[in-house]
Length: 289
Image (cartoon, rainbow, N blue to C red; front, side, top):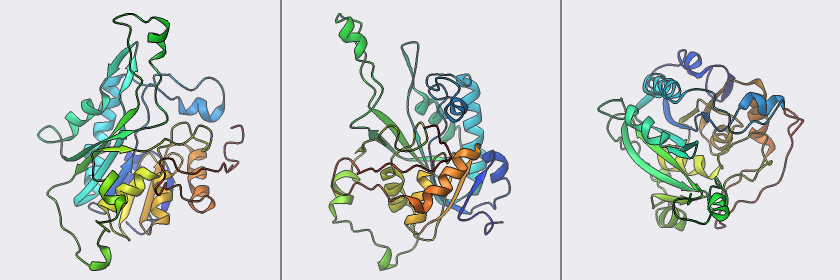
């Protein structure tokens, strides 16, 4: 059951949707799981209150759900030698950092999980992050210091052994191009986040991230999955760079927004600039924003 899913954006629980997808059919998953305690997505859509900083689940419950999704459902549909890239950051609860990426990682990779850890990349946000230094400005004394959080992690997981894949000369990456030697060659990627208010979603990751990951871990024509598709950054990039795509989200509004953005917006790839150029485009699916 692959043809009915490819090049589609579907509303539903990814666990139920993926149960209808054939095993070993996805080459690459790129996703950012819902924030556990930073975003109330329903409040963001309905505009019925402040949507930031609201814990939706206990940490243990959240981790159990993510482990089920990644270790069972996504692992099953991923091809042998395929990849799963998870964009995820630490949490701060009552002044204490919760190392959520590493808590999740310890449950996903062998010997406790199914995956192999292929790479761990740090996404340095350059121009935006979580401001914690202000408390030290107010109280400039020892023990009050809190660093601004300017990074998240990109966890690159691999199913099974490395597969060499095709060796067609047309597929060769321009290894001497500075795009693939300066920035991507390192374990820290300096990528500015999406400016606030430019996309009708509270926390989209920049298109530069799925663009790089698709170039590095997939070929044209491969199926790319995002089980938490949100505003559609992954599906939009896949559509524009000749990958088949499948996006899943629980909310009708975000499904409609992601479909709208496939062809209605230019791709925001930064080229040689540090920050991509942006232009606001309204979809009218979330008219109050």
